Image (cartoon, rainbow, N blue to C red; front, side):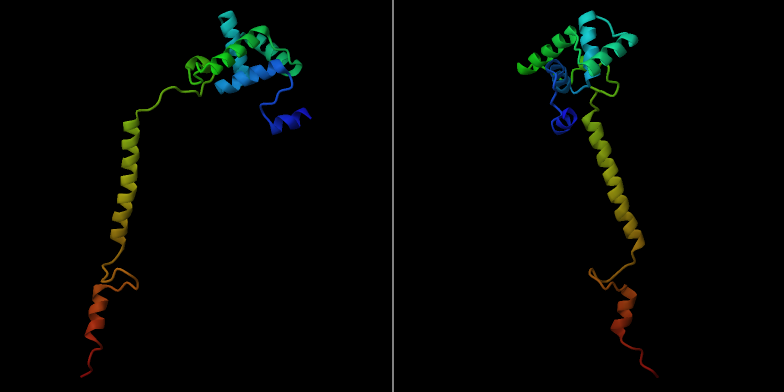
Length: 160
C-alpha cells in the first residue's frame, strides 16, 4: 500500500522524520541525498566522506534512520520557508548540484541574437520566394504571366 500511496501522493511519507527531510528537499528543489550532504556539511563543517555517505544514505532509505543533524537541518529549512526567508535558488543549497546555474545570460544579447535569427529566416524566405516566382499580372490564382495575358488580349491570330 505504501508504493501505491506514494504514486498517488508523492509528498506522502509514512515515517514522520523522513517526511520532514523530504519536505525540506522539495522546498529546496534538490534530492534527499543532497539534503543529507548539506546537513552533514552544516553540522560537521566538512563534506561527507564517500564511505560514510553510502552507510548513512543506506540506513536512511532502507531502515528509515534519520540522523539528528539531518532532522535539525530539515527543520531549519522548513522554518525558513514558513517565515518567508528561504531562497531556494541560493547557490549554498546547490553546491552538490553540478547542473545548477545562477548565471543569467545578458537579456539584451539574447534578444538581439533571437531577433537577428528571425529576421534572417523571414527575410531569406521572402527573398527566396521572390527569386523563384515569375512575374504575374494577377494577385489571385490563376496566375498568368504578362506575356500570356498579351497573347490572350490580342486574340487568335488572323489567318491570311
